[in-house]
Image (cartoon, rainbow, N blue to C red; front, side, top):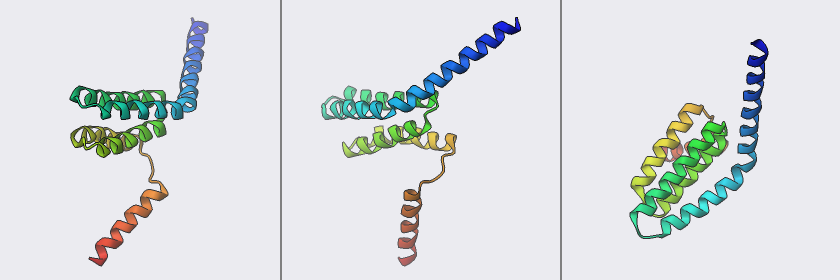
Length: 129
């Protein structure tokens, strides 16, 4: 019985490693394909296409999170929020932004230098006013 348990544990570890590896390799390709599909869906006039774009972005974010590719999930949701805002879909962007914030909070991702600079610039503007 312990040999079977060891074999299953080894198989699970191997599957997890393959999922993580494939998520990291395909993250850029997936992001590019997702962006093109979202742009196409948002360029249409019906609201069902817009909602489908939101669903596509949120499912890709969830898929990246399940695979352990947190940076890819953050990049997908961030780019999606900006794209939705660019097309003036504030309600959809708000829903995706909530997922983006939740992803950042749950992953406890540290601030990038760019965010620190922006935050510092905003603070400096407030002090001058």
